[in-house]
Figure 1 (tube, rainbow, N blue to C red):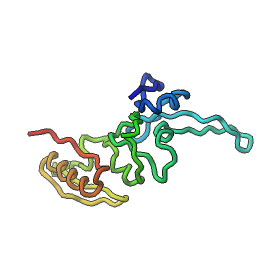
Figure 2 (tube, rainbow, N blue to C red; figure 1 turned 180 degrees about the horizontal axis):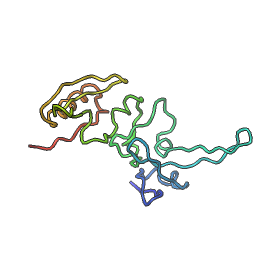
Figure 3 (cartoon, rainbow, N blue to C red; figure 1 turned 90 degrees about the horizontal axis):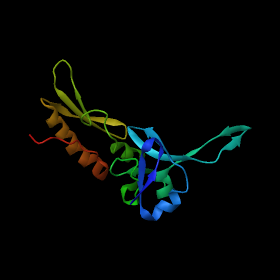
Figure 4 (cartoon, one colour; figure 1 turned 60 degrees about the vertical axis):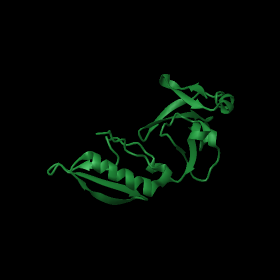
Length: 161
């Protein structure tokens, strides 16, 4: 594994075999969906006399042309090693997202204080139940995520009690 420098003092991880090919360009970072990705600008082209610029993400350079989209197994958009990349559908890639909240699929009802768990697949939310404590709700989400999303499931980390 080798590191390719990016802007803002960050680095992307790549396989040794891909390093020379990828290191011929300058790479910058792009933040999207709570993740950071490596990308580079393609040469400027002119459309109707106006300059336009397109960008390519490093993981797309590594994995090449695929029918779906590219998913980072570990959720780290800067880990572009081939073993960490896999083809996915938009739904599968969404299942592997990182939550902005403490737990995925959990919200607390303000009046009752109960924790509600739900999971989404193909844009359809399924209610998993209401729970007295947050850890039980997170556990219910994890079980449903494994069943529904299989290897793409992003599980909640529940502390041991």
